[in-house]
Length: 512
View 1: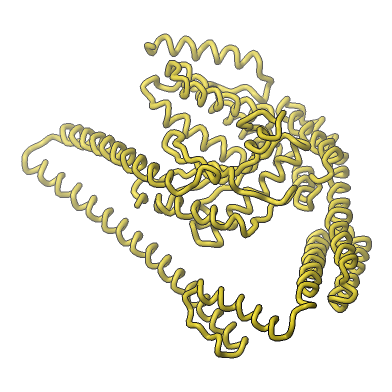
View 2: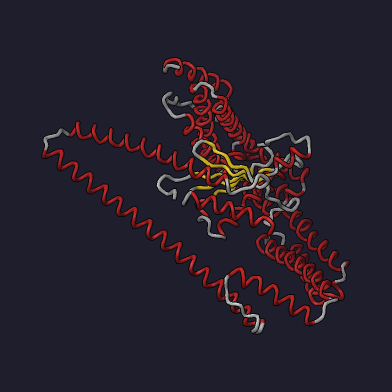
């Protein structure tokens, strides 16, 4: 399609957009040159949408952000179908304009609604999304405030903020008192039912006393949020510890002292073997433990040293490259002067050389990416993950990762799969990674979004803890159920929709 035709289409979209948008939502759609690479532009837009969600545009300017996401998905579908470039670029241009306006709305919301934003964050941190219906009402009240800002109705947002804050504050305290302490009570009750009075009496007494103390503290200090959350979390940890100790004590009741000693020795020996440490089963248990701890400390120190060395070497290489480029540029300038080459001709030659180099680098990067893509595909079994390309990104769709129902805990059975993900990430050197959490549609949208965010954060924390990448290179986002891959009407479809996607974006020059 020729450029005049594209301009006419964009002018039409600008006109429609101005008619359908309210005062704050109006945006100027900036045309995109038809010669632009649609795949790269859609990939850039995808990154901008991710950044927008990180900046909470989806809740602080929900209407415009939703429209931007719709245009992104339409552009992606257009690419997949092979639609005309002009139509794809129109969608990208519209989404950019909507994101720009949403960003401005978000700035206003943060200024006008600081108390409501803080109350919402506190309620979600406390786990209030577990109260699905009631929290959904509180969330809708919050979204009414941000929609009012989108509609340029600041007075309405300010007038209703106190009511929304009160509702969210109530949800937060309820979550701390009922959800967390309720789980503590249930865990202690289960341990008692399974014989904790006989199997772990001291731990049972301590856990019960701690529960009563935390309950009293919350009632007497309703505004000491940090302290109550910390105390409630500690009480839950110790109640779970009580249950684990009780169950283990029950298993050991029928075992002889020698059998118990051999069992402990077996565990220590297994860890020692996996670490490659010396076999010290002929020594005391304390010596064996010291052997394990010392080996782990040495491995951690070695890993840290290697990481620092790699960063130092990379910094030196970048410095050398910069110096060489400067020297080459200076030499080219001197040669041009000696040969009587004009500045204009030199600039043209430099521009053409740079363009040629950029094309060559892009082609080389694409070839390398395809090579690594084929390599990473072989890492995963079909029931673990699907690996595919998305523009200049690689996506690992982890269907094989499993979480406890309603929780975001990384269980040991997931370690092998996550180890393969680590290997895949490291294959690309030092890339940027986005971890996306997705759920099925069971439950409320707010609950699903929060749970998917927690699960994405758990995967990110695992990757960071295992030194896969620095934390600043990994983004965790929860999408809830808004991006299904299959129908949620069947158990099979819901299972497909419950997933973690790891999106790897290589950085040119950092790919191994």
